[in-house]
Image (cartoon, rainbow, N blue to C red; front, side, top):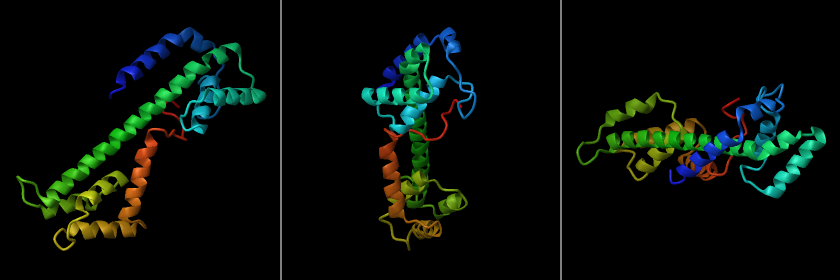
Length: 201
């Protein structure tokens, strides 16, 4: 959120620097997940995918030269490399932000369940809260947050603790493994790129 104005500025520059008339002249891909989109956009997406969204001018230069040994680019495409790279990076940022918000929502839902199970200043513990999640397909973010909230509780006093451990065991994992995996995922979100097709495809 602190850098929203910077992202907004980049989006404005994309709209200015890539007018529709220029976009229409760029050679398009005829097949694959980006069929119909500019070839240079596919090249920029491949560069970002292979560098984990880390921008290095020298690496980009080598990548473009290597690409051209197979498929030479037009002058127009070479001019469009910078703007299409910006588009791909903005798209990656959008997807990372969406993922962060989704996981945050799941953690908030786990907190609500934990509050019901443990009780709050205003409400007594509600053992029936467990029934609300027993049939759910639980995400890693939800489970990790619930585990962290219930970790110090007595399984005898809070049946959800034992239920959660059994559920994880049935899934072939443990709470420690899930916590480790979730922390790795959170740390990687800022620099990772998606290896699947981008949202516009």
